Length: 198
Length: 198
Image (cartoon, rainbow over all chains, first blue to last red; front, side):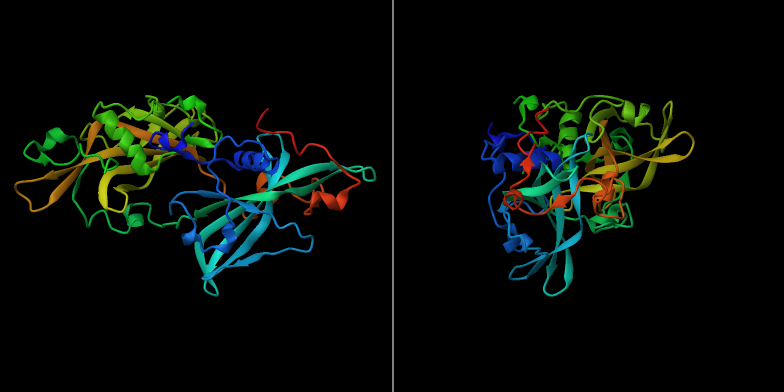
C-alpha cells in the first residue's frame, strides 16, 4: 500500500500497544506492516530539528542502551536536554492485563531549565521469564531497539472559546448564527473555496 | 482505496480543519475523500449506544437545526442528556487565521446530573459575507449538515506510573531492566508471541 496516497484525515496514529507491535517486529527482524518509522537517534536532537510536521505525532526507532549500569535519565542536545519525567508505565495488551512493554516519558528543557511542551515517550519491549528458583514470573526489557513517540503537549487554555486561537471572537468578524436566507442582501463570498485545496 | 485494508496503526483521525473539509464536501453534495462518516442523529443516543469502538474517536454527520429561534443547548436521551459546555470556538485554516468553521462542545450527563467523560464536538461550516451597508465582513453558519466528533475524555491520573492502569507495578511481576544475557538460567517464555495477532 502506498502510504502517501491515504485520503485526507487518515494518518499513522498508533495506540501504545500497536506501537509495541511495530517494535516487536523490528526487534525480531520481521517485516513491518508499513515502513513509516525511521531509524534515528532522536534524543541527540532538539525536538524542532527532528523530521516531520510540528503538530503531528512523530515516531522513531532508536538503538537501546543495554548497559546494566546505565540508568541515564537525561540526554543533552546543542540547545538543551531531554529529562525523564515521572515513573515508568506498563503497557498492557487490550483488556488482558498482559504487560507487553514499558513506557518512559522525557520532557525537553531548553537552555539550562526552561521546560518546553515537547514530550518524547520511549517504549521498550519486555519479555516474561520463568525461573527455576522462584515461584513467580519475571519481566525484563529486551531487544536492541526502542521506539519513540514525539509530540507537543497542548497548552491548556482556561477560556474554551476563541481566545485559545490567539484572537477574540468578538474582535474579529461579526458572526450571524443563522441560515443564509435571513440575509439575502448580502453576498456569500467564499464558502465554496476549499481551504485544504490550497 | 479500501479503508478496511489499512496497515495497523493507521486510522481516520482528522484535524478540525480536515473534518471541516469533509463537512464542506457533504454540504455542497460533492464526493467525499473517503466514505468513513455515517449519517446519524448522534445527539439522540447515549454515547455507549453509538456505533464504533469505545476508545476510538468517532464521527457522524447530523442534520443541522436551522431554526432561528433554536438556541438548544441540551439534548435528551433515554439515560441522560447532552449539555453544551464552554464557549463556541472558531476553527481556522492552517496558519492563515481564516475562520472556516465553529465548534461547540457537549458533555454527556447520566441520569439527572452525573457528569461523564463523554464529549461530543459539533462542527459547523461558516460562510463569509460582504454587505453593501457595513464596511466589514460578516460570518454565519451555513449548510444543512454538521459533523460531530465523539470521544471519551481521558481520566487525568496523578501518578504517572503503572497506577494509571489500575494495578501497581510493584504488586505484579518483578521487573529486571536488563538484557536477556544477564539471566541465562531463566527461560524466555512469550516474547515472540504477538498480542495483536490474537
